[in-house]
Length: 186
Image (cartoon, rainbow, N blue to C red):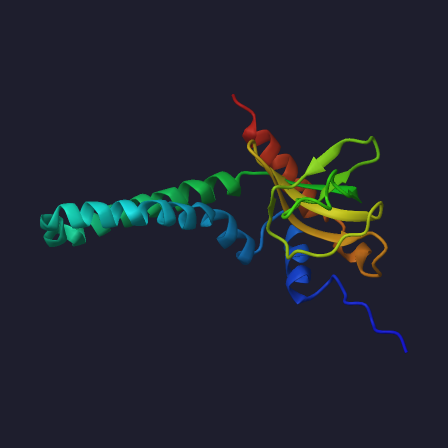
């Protein structure tokens, strides 16, 4: 008796693909991408807050004011990131999985893909759940092309029985064109 293979298309990935095929991000993707730098900033600021707090005990009496300023700064940062990604175009391509060079020696490897022309796509950020990829197999890939990095939003093997359901819709193409014209400087 053979063990059934785990399906890549779980409920979370289905939800992401449904939203991405219309050219938008789902709620979990929005939260992940807009609040991403918060954890890093908190980790970097925590020692500074402790050091300053211990050096200047008078600041504890004004802690509410400091907390208010920090919350306003974090809130504005989240709003700026949300605005930036609300205008970003979601891209769709059929890509083939490739094993990165020296993958056996890397502790944390970022899978790479390539297209029909041989152009390599590396995704440093993943908003999709991590899945095991098969080399040289075709995948439907939705991604954001941020100026600093490419962000993988969702993917599905092209050979999956439900692959046809998750092809880009007419709404995807309308949003793509609208955001492309909005991104051009006037």
